[in-house]
Amino acid sequence: MVAAVVVGMSSCKKPPQGAPMAMGPVPVTLEAADERTLTDWTALNGRVEAVETVEVRPRVSGELVSVSVTPGAFVKAGDELFRIDDRVYEAKLAQAKAELQRAEAGAVTAQREFGRAADLLKGKALSPEQAEARETVHLQAQAAVAAARAAVTAAALDVEFCGVKAAIAGRVGRALVTEGNVVSGMAGGATLLTTIVSVDPVYVYADVDENTLLKMGEARRAGAAKIPVELQLSGENGFPHKGEVESFDNRVDAGTGSMVLRAVFKDPEGMLTPGLFARLRLPVTGTWKGVTTSDSAIQTDLARKFVYVVDAAGLAQYRPVVLGDVIDGRRVIREGLKAGEQVVVRGHARIFMPGMPVVAAPAEAEKSEPKEREKP
Image 1 (spheres, rainbow, N blue to C red):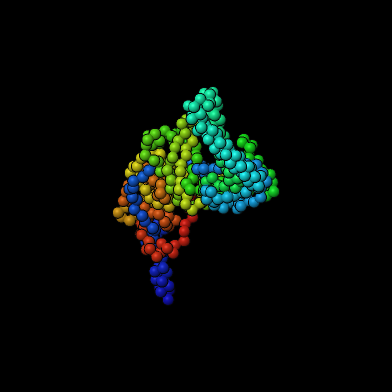
Image 2: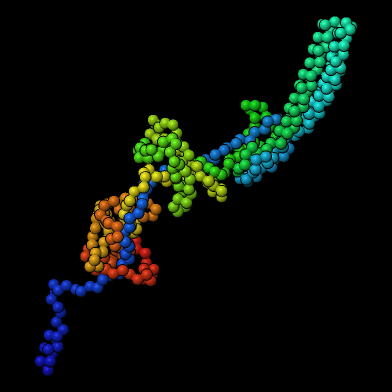
């Protein structure tokens, strides 16, 4: 009985304390670093502005009898927005037409008298001085007709100006004056009724610092090809709006050390409202070849960035890297990684130390695995 107990206890003895524990490869998500044609971009803050902004003011004075403005609505060029009482101007037009008729009647009489002057002058029934006087009256009558016609045209324009119309197509603001108010059409002091801004295309203005200007080099010289630029509004992902740099200012502001850039964007959907804050992204260099990987592959060790590179033996090796910018959703690796090398992009928490064996996780396992918390 005693012998049996001794044999049983000896068979349950633990292995030596220093013996290594065998571990199987841990599942991780791998990705091959790739080489891409890249462009360095810079980000700028800007403001959206309308290409055309019109202040709607009357050209004649009078009482407003109708207002046809819906704030924020789109209007076409020529749409009537306000109407001024035109009764006084209609009366002036009628008066001008009557003056024209009187001038034309006087011109007919002067023409007849001038036509007889030549025959009377030959028969010496009329002195040369009298003939010249008839010619002068004839010319004056013609001038009176021309002046009367101009007066009719001016009076007709005043009647037309009683309908205040949109000068451009665009989005109209709120009416600043309501019906019943008397507005002025006096030059230099005309009443502001509303404003209209064009909606497509739009300008975006941004300040470019000196360093960025120097990096851009020949790209901003006059006559160079258009520089592409992308735009992002608050709350948008990426830079979905595409445009181009329309112009640079002609000097650097000595106070701010920057130059004003103007970009133009097509906006058929009317999303780029004048006054909106926007982020711009534009290239500062030409294209170049660079190694990239997913940003999720980057890990932090104190102040150093690193990735886990899986070698031919299937071991995760610690590799310090020098990072570049994120371009088109890919993290640029300036130093430390070659195209084609396999890097770990998910599952870092399972790697307790460099040199651990890993295996590529199946697609289903990758989908079901909870997203890891990004390391600082």
